[in-house]
Length: 241
Image (cartoon, rainbow, N blue to C red):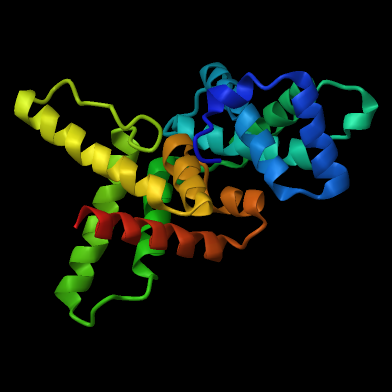
């Protein structure tokens, strides 16, 4: 997926999409599933935002609705039959809306209190904490964990994964220059990762796709995606020195 943005995939001609469906259904090419997900991810996010405006729940974040929308999109990709002549967008829309409705109904006060962000940050922390330690020194281990979490915050907050030129307008001139240099180094580090590791970081930090959903996309276990995430963050930390 390196070098291909979501906007590029949205512009894919219908005949190319038809080819993706044929290769996925009859050739069992898992990569086509990834491309179809990325192609329609913006649709899922747009539906999630509309549904949140229509049925706001106290304590619920947009990330919760996006999570349900991604689940619906994955289900639609797996169940869609391209031979029926139905447009996938219309088919997926109904399943995404239904999945959001079901997910919103399942949410209780505890889920709403913790919120999407807390669950996502806990998932990342577990991923980094479970990685094999590079040292037996507790202080060194704690520093590595903190550095990994800080890199994750930068990837998410600065838009480094997809837009390495992003600059915080609240910073002064020197800080903006330093920020650009640091984000450029992070972007370079991402380019040096394997295609799979870069895909995991892009989907998780740029689009908010959970480890479980990425695992479903790649045909891996959630634990394996967690390991790959930790390895990718460690590689970025080494790249930053």
